[in-house]
Amino acid sequence: MTTLATRLITLIMLLQRRPNQKAAELAEKLGISVRTLHRYFGMLDEMGIPIYAERGPHGGFSLVRGYKLPPLVFTPEEAVAIYLGASLVGQMWGRLYQEAAEGAMAKLDNVLPDEQRSEIAWARRSLVATGMHRADPTTLAPLLEALRRGAHQQQQIQMTYQSSASPAATERRVDPYALVHRSGWWYMLGYCHLRRALRTFRVDRIQHIEVLNQPFQAPEDFDVWRYLDTEFKDQPVVRACLRFVPEAAHIVKTSLPAWESVQEHPDGSLNVTLTAPDLYWLASMVLSFGAWVMVLDPPELRTLVREWALGTAALYQD
Image (cartoon, rainbow, N blue to C red; front, side):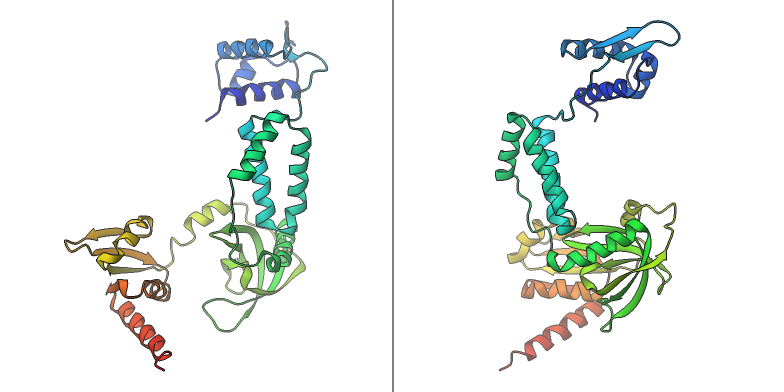
């Protein structure tokens, strides 16, 4: 939602960019009426921001010659948002953008008034984000640097990739479209020439990478956000039904987004349904709960969990 403060700042920037603008034109750009625009002019005048009007076919509203909007006009909350955003960029991208993030934060410290600096100091003590990475960011840095260079310069990459679906690594030539940080992992989205399709690659599984002197052109209609929304839409899924014992009811009730449906029984046990990409993921999840959960369906999952459980038990017979 656009706030009054945002509209006033936008109005100043519009007038600063080009003088002699008509009231109707400015009102349309701001999405307000001409009457409201004149009310804004009165507010700016009370704030000491000089605006004048010239009559005639070439006239319009302008800022007094020589007036410039101060380079940094932030509320305390806006200053905190910018500072915390720069901090997160430094944490997520490591050395690739860490120096730039630190430079931006240093500039804020030097130019912001005391009120904003005090708010930032409080935020640094009280608003903390940690555990951004599941893989060592130091190890990932060279990979991310190469992938960023390939995506930015639109150069193909050659990489040795270890997929979770195969014990052997494969050589892939890829057009890198975008880098995505999701659920603690870094991913590269791009066109795989081996599979001849768009694919998602986890960066920590890349064993070797080289940026090639081979340009590519990303499709004009590629939208990374739309791709992420529909990434698993057409992939096969497995639906399972599990029963949690009464002692584990709290696990189900505190993780409701994980289940498609939940059915509670008189004895306190709960049946849940969920979907997953494959049986192996489901089996790993089921075994993580030990004896608190039993697979009701599908039969293949029951068999797989039983085989894994027996195999694990055999390792500890001594």
